[in-house]
Amino acid sequence: MPTFIDLSAPIAQDPAELPDALRTDIEYRDHAQGAKDIEALLGVPARLLRNGEGWAVETLKTFGTHNSTHVDAPWHYNSTVGGERAQTIDELPLEWFFGPGIVLDVTGKADGDPMTAGDAQAALAAAGHELKPRDIVLVRTGRDAFYGEPDYMARGPGVTFEATKWLYEQGVRVMGIDAWGWDAPLHLQAQEAVARDEPAIFWAAHQANLAYCQIERLFNLGALPSTGFTVACFPLKIVGGSAGPARAVAILP
Image (tube, rainbow, N blue to C red; front, side, top):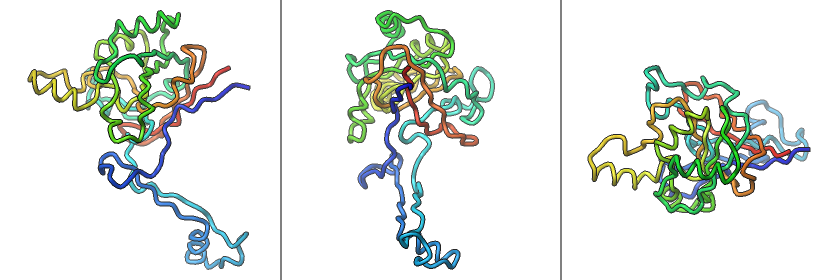
C-alpha cells in the first residue's frame, strides 16, 4: 500500500482578532440542533431519531478561495495572460494537478530573500533530478511552522520572477510553496516598489504573464523525500474562480 502524506493546512475557526480579509468563520450546528431542525422542517420529533439526535452540519460563513491551502489560477494574476483571457480555476486541465513531485529545499533563506533560478537549479542538482514537463515543484521554506501565528503573512523568502519563468520553461505548470504566498512577503515587495517607483517589482512572480498555477500555504514538505512521490492537488471547481481550496496530498510508494 502507498503512504499518503497530507500537505494541506487545516480549515478552522480563526481568532476574532484576525482581520476580516484573512479570516475564516465556521458555524457548527451539532446533533441536538440537527434534531430541532428536522422537527421544524419535516415534523419528525427527536424521539423518532437514533439517540434523539439529528444531523450535524457546518456552514462556512467566511471563507475566501485563497484561505487555507489553495491553488491559484492564472485569472488571479491578471485578466489576460499571453494576450488571451486568463483561465479561471474551473477551466484548467485536471491532469495538471496529479503528477510527479519534486521538493526544492530553500529553508536556509531569510524572509524576503527569494529563490532565484540559480537556487532552483542548485536544489535540483542536489536532489539529482532533471525536471520534466508536468512535474509539480514544491518549494520548502519551513514557514508552515508559523501557520496561524500573527506574523505568518510576513514570513517566507518567496520566489523571483526569473525562477518562476525558468520553471515554466521546463514545462512545470503547477508550483507550490509552504508559505503564505509565492512572491516575497507583500510588505517587503511594496516597500521596494514604492522606493524605486518601478513596475514589475510588486507581485512580479504572480504577474509573470505565464499560464501557470501556484499552490500556496502547503504543509509537511519536510516529511517528503526530494523526489520519488506523486502529488494530488485538485482544486474545488469554482466557476469563474481565481483560486480553489485544495486537499493537497503526497503519495509515496
